[in-house]
Length: 572
Image (cartoon, rainbow, N blue to C red):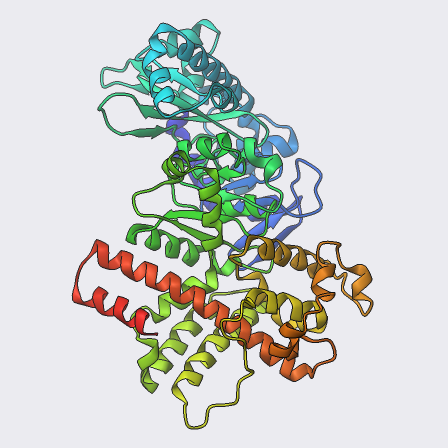
């Protein structure tokens, strides 16, 4: 019995034994909502990184990279072979096992790694030979350096030759096929899967080749082709460029779309770029990044498709968000991708775009208000917006984050109410107008002088970016300082050297215009002043982003609705 004929038998075992129950017999598992995790049984760790997918019957460790199904787990955990692992589970269920002599042993993962590594070396050799000239020309035209070619182990697949080479190295056709390197024609003969393509090896976090991507070098289709999923390659768990980026993921990461985007950013000194492989960014991808940075940046095209992709990502990850697991979104100018933008405008210009990133709550607010004119809201429309916001809030499983989002949305809603309630409008704290005193500086100086505010305004400060690069650096350092719990009554001695000047700030002109920032000022008035300054700054940034997006929508689709939307944003 060939293994493909054995599939219904194996599927019955998988369907009758839930994978998390099987693993839970020897390993403590943790369930939260739809997420099932465990401390990896195959390496030492203190934080669970072993993810179990009961729907697909697969497990994957984001720490050591091991993955597999029911039978792989039994083999590794109890040191059994493939047939013995089937026998063990079949006996448990009272299922009669087909004759062992007729069952072909499944290739071990180590065998697959061996054939994939041999294929990678062969592809790399072909790139340097005469047959690889077209691939070298393509790379040269895309300005890919030799250092990048070596770092990412780029290669070339000619029309034929890999199968015969691997066979000469002692690899069986079964192993070659199991590794996803060959296809079978109608007449039964096998041939190379990748032909006349630039090859991008896909490597796991243990620096093992697990699959390949190939870009066609002529006019054929598909333009990009990836290896099929195999026992060592499930694309939902893999990010291209992660092995090269991992040592640089210290508090920052950017997710782009394709191979060339990753290579370009690494080449230009932004080595923390990664990309999913022919699939939408998923929770499993982000769980790997969240181990290194709490808030990766996701880059999308600045068109309708990019906006749609951003909201699709948000929709998937809302239940998994918490204080140390979030995202921000970067929308590129229309027609640009990271590769083209950096190549044409330079690294500095690309890094400036980071000042325009938008947090999740901001995009949610844009989504629920996109069909309303905020300066002309009726009571019914106001309630509709509140209802839409509640629908999003229900999907946030983390209680603390849900409360933080609720406070943020309350600020936005309160701002709308204030604009509408003219006769009974509460007296606001007077903020300086056109004095050269920036709202950014007001927020930081006030917080340094009144550290008790941190507990109430921390989420707001972490969710906004400052335009002034120097003050933005101060904002980041101040967040690190307060997040570490280093603030106390003797804060002046504890402040980092580059922030002390904010407390020593002694400008009577500043304090005469912003009295609530001064040490000892009434706490209630200080909080009110800080929130008003934040509100004003956020609204300025939000309005600018809204105007830019409205203009882009109108440019892409000139109709009366988009024209009215742009007009409404300019009137606010």
